[in-house]
Image 1 (cartoon, rainbow, N blue to C red):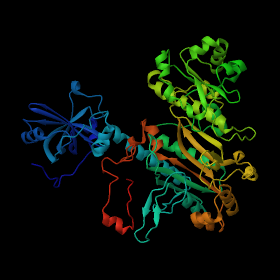
Image 2 (cartoon, rainbow, N blue to C red):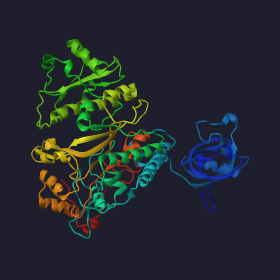
Image 3 (cartoon, rainbow, N blue to C red):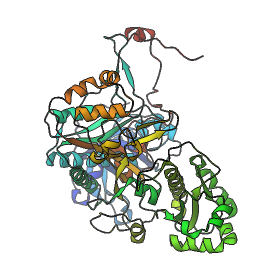
Image 4 (tube, rainbow, N blue to C red):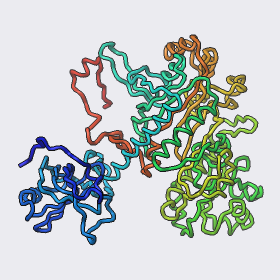
Length: 625
């Protein structure tokens, strides 16, 4: 028989009692984490959000409570009434925060029973993620998940407080809005009132936060829900949360200072000191040195090893002499067998017009001087895994070779990107086994990353870096056109405006990304605040005046009413929490996530809806046969 709570009121949480509380009368409530029956004594580990406390049911002292204890099983919800007492010295459990005490129960009430759960929240690791997501309400009881969401709360609270202290106002923007292009597919919501018309869920509050600057709010922020219909991966979900902010009259450095301050406060809430200011690097240098626009500074960067090879070497190895020749080094991998090296081949993306020398031993045998020079240039030890990546002359790709003095061509970027992707994949593969993710001061110095307040200490775990001077446009192979590399409200550098139509490859965007440990945490820019410039950008993208008016009319109108210079950024809160929690993917820090197939296994969504619902929305479903 189940009991009612009645007038009983909880006095303490399970994980809060300590030796100083001995002798207190308490009422604890929670879930039975474990039950151990020793005959006349039954021990219950009672769990709530704060932790676990041991309850003792002695048959001689409380026969009724002991009888109740015989009925309970794991995950039953119970109330325990009794006195805090010190454990015997030999019974102290140092692994528990409450391990010095226990509750001598005088009464036990069973508030609810529980079916046998598909897994126990007491387990530290459950391999079947689909089972975890289907029974998410059980999974979220696990100590690891409780820690993740407590961490999320504390970090979010610290960031919100810091932005408020910096003079930002928290303002909500619409969830039902107009469909505007922002790089991914929109989620569309049909209107019942306006037949055949649709709202869109916001991919970001981009236009609205710019309008808030036009409205004179000066500094806005929001912990914003965003929605993007795109393929999922470990660091991406259909719905996510971002720290969104915008400022009037900013310089780029003003945005950086604000972000560094609130991130330092958020990381401090997690017990991590984040030195400021963060280092910064240009996009081109980031590609040259790391093969990525979200570089992971825990690993050695790429090394230019073209001087190690003669022209005859390159011809024999079938390497394109007009493209970069770089080496990547994964530390401390040790000796690999031929099969182990060949198993790495699928990790290399050969679609980008690049190739790699897969057997450094063979290189050393055929070209000993070149191999020795490569090792010298990279500073590799015998235990390091070295790979050489270069351009493939046999792989002709249709890409623009337009160059601006000092900038990379698309073919060069493709080689660097192939090396950078390979570097990341190999590091992931060997990190646990060989500790490849270990940063040293030597590595930072070799990467030529400047601007940090202090040298980056290899013992620290988090390495932020700003990436600046991105290209304004990128060449789209399918259409043969230049398309925006960012959203179309990003301002170009004033000095590059004259090249918008004549030489789009040379135009730099006044935008910036923040990366950390190989993840893009956020992206932002100084915005276009003049209508004539915005129209010029639309024209350079092939957007007609009529189309611009249809898609952005209200925003173009707003630009005519005294728009201040403004800029901002949005950072992924979920990714920040994922990093600080040491989680493998976003699903560990989002309460009710979707699977990689975009399914909510717990709520069984998405599902079909009734014909009546469709008729009310003026929608007909046409399935492909």
